[in-house]
Image (cartoon, rainbow, N blue to C red; front, side, top):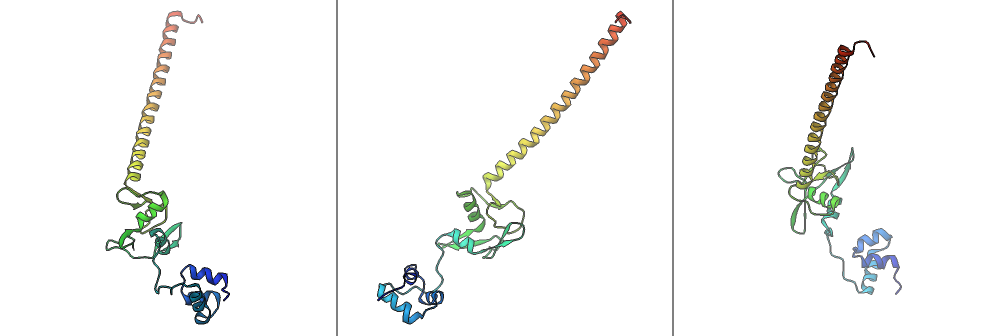
Length: 181
């Protein structure tokens, strides 16, 4: 029996007879079931297939929103945080978005940085380490600005002192030598 290559590929990928029949516009019983039997493949398991990874499940449950944000379409906790269940565990959508963006597990609590409630856009989250580094940078900038202000004020004071000293020397010179210049 000759079996179409596209039919064999879909069967090997684990698609159901009905799904293959719809996609290839063939009869499920006469064509797909016979090909499955000829290839020695078992019947496809019914129901929705679980996502291979939490990241795939994350992308299935998001929807683009205005302003470059992602809206969460999945379940939320009692506290209103976006979450999903994968591998028998409840996972935070914020943590998954952070892991996708940074390629590592977050440290501590993950919070959105864009101030948009419930945003799960990849790259819009910070963990404890990121927030600490941002606070350090802000403190450095504040200190730098205070130091620069002090330095500018000190420079101005030195300039005023220098001008006053030059004026006193000129007055003294005029007092000693008069108009002999």
